[in-house]
Image (tube, rainbow, N blue to C red; front, top):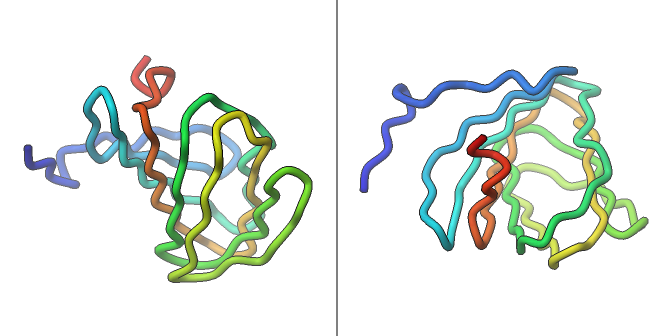
Length: 107
């Protein structure tokens, strides 16, 4: 499977957050999320495992109440059902990988 970035619709999630679902199969999903400075990925939890890689910018990440500053090239892991969220400290882009895929993103 080849997915061309130019063929993917950019979804405006509101409040300065934009998402592109890059590729997905039942057991795996890759998503690019763009944030304008100050945009918030609200604290939430899901049953999926998640690994995230910072492509551009920086974030304050909150995982289970512990806050850290992460920058370009940093990666973090979210275990299933862990509360987590981010605050974009500048215009930023994150690459999220989920297993299994996020069915809620496909609706």
